[in-house]
Length: 424
Image 1: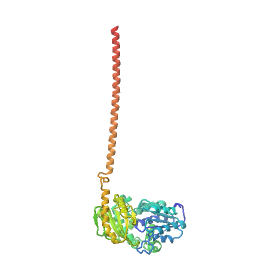
Image 2: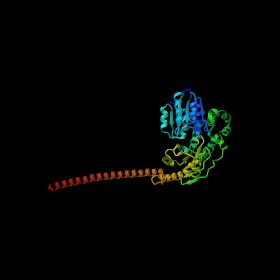
Image 3: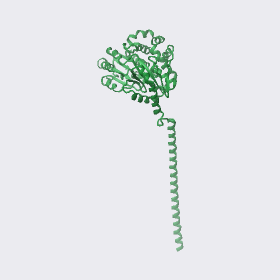
Image 4: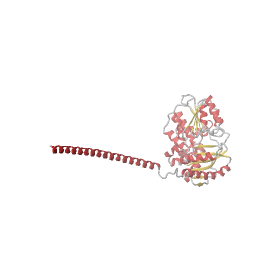
């Protein structure tokens, strides 16, 4: 069933709980409500595994308890351990209760085909920015509000496609301050924005993240205002002790919960490393992992990370983005023991793939292109000059041949006249 078919049914937006997920939710709600559609939202972060947190498995219970509504799922992947209940909930709702639009930007394979064959409209877009802009584009509600929030979400997700548009100030504001405030100071942030009462009234129905994104969307609160409030509530991220191995920085200390990805970002930003290796713990899944992530401004190492992780950790659960992966571990001790080795091996892989003579650029490609164009122009000019010279020689030869022919004819005429004169 195509999502573009007009439906009077209510729409439920379910989005992830990180900053990028929040921006997806804000933009979706903004576009829907301003198109006259009755839209609601659910997104809940909890450190209690028994609560319906917005994880792929736990959110299945939320879907199962919904009535006849259309659903828009944003930024909640399928490629996770034991996804059957999540997939079954999506398919069951699409078949019996209402349309389901499932959209993501993570790498997916067979799941997209399975969902589409089963009645779900499943879409994978190319980047975090594109996902944040998906619903506004569907409903023709692209404006400065949705553009700015999409950019904020892309920065929070380290989407390299927007790196050229992002100042260092915005990068720090989003990755360091806004991320912390939205994760750990939601209630105080809501109060600072003047939406505290509304936020608390809807915690039970919308979740503690959904209540915030709904209020921001309804009030049309700009990102600058939210960032300004966030910076009054949190302090800069404190980095754990770290080591640098060539182009890779690593730490074996467990970062504060919920900040592992941002610690990896800051380690790269502080040291200038091309990649970071960091342990992490997810209380929602009770699972330890190792993050291997590129510096988002050095995308050239993304393929190296992908090749290394996929060959090194066959059989492990691997999630995340291209060049920014989380690999499951049995324990914190296992994570700590393998991290230094990962850093050394990854640095060697980067050195062999990036700095070999086959790939290193001693001269910029743009300069080489200009030089080649200039050489071609010069050769073409020389070729034209040679052709012109040959044409002139040919003309001269033709003129010379004609002159010689005239001389021969004159000699003949003289000879004939002389002969006649002599015999006469």
